[in-house]
Image (cartoon, rainbow, N blue to C red; front, side, top):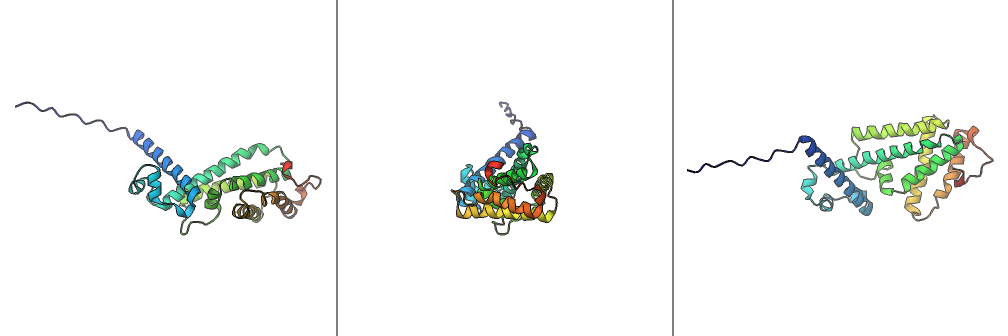
Length: 218
């Protein structure tokens, strides 16, 4: 009888390699989710569409993200990581006078929000019924908001209620711009006036009344 030699099984890839591939797939799914929600709206995200976008069945997507809310949660966390990078990128304004720094920060915040309305809605509005970020993702958001508070402190505004007021004013302008004039600048043109009004109330000693309230002052 001929001897049958068993063919050795191919060695399993190292766990690190498998995990790296899994991470790449998760990133691909997340990127596809952003593309879909920017085209269809946050509430319109479909697991079937998402699976098709990355070349897999919807059931396979669940092996990477156990629910649609888990995808929203990953997007929420990524959005705040991008917000964190935005704050860090503004660190070169330290040489500006406090009022000019506030004005510059306000315009940059407005631009960050209006250049990606879907991300803005996910981070600053409750657009998705029933969705709550996980404790881990919410902790990232709180850390970033603390960094934003540090930016306010750098211009002499430390009262938490004052910071809440400033954020409410600028997110309000953002919402109006996105909803009612997305292709033009009707509410963007009000940012400087809003800064001046806030300075009168929050830190009048910082207001340079000799400086024109125009975007060029940033």
